[in-house]
Image (cartoon, rainbow, N blue to C red; front, side, top):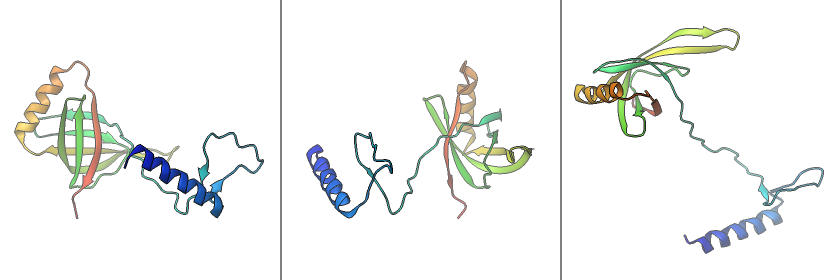
Length: 145
């Protein structure tokens, strides 16, 4: 779609929504917004959040980390080292190790295994050669089904 086509569709939606009473307005009539807001029948959108986890240790076969999330055995996590190297690891064990009763929060120890030792060797060499260990998990895929 071209920029003009997007704008044409937007203008049509604004017009149709105005006629249908779907534009949101403040109750006090003092709306200072530059653009109209739309009431939606389904107000759900997916927002991707990239969580960070503290790494406990790393070996050629895998790594362990602390997580606020419970993982299932078989989940696959994507781990990035800085911005240069990414590797997948399979969750082989996850157990609760600490809780904060004041905030009803749990911490889990998650043990992950690399696909093969060659990947583990490359990952371990790169992480040991870096001054700043910046590990980040970009998400996981549930492959247990």
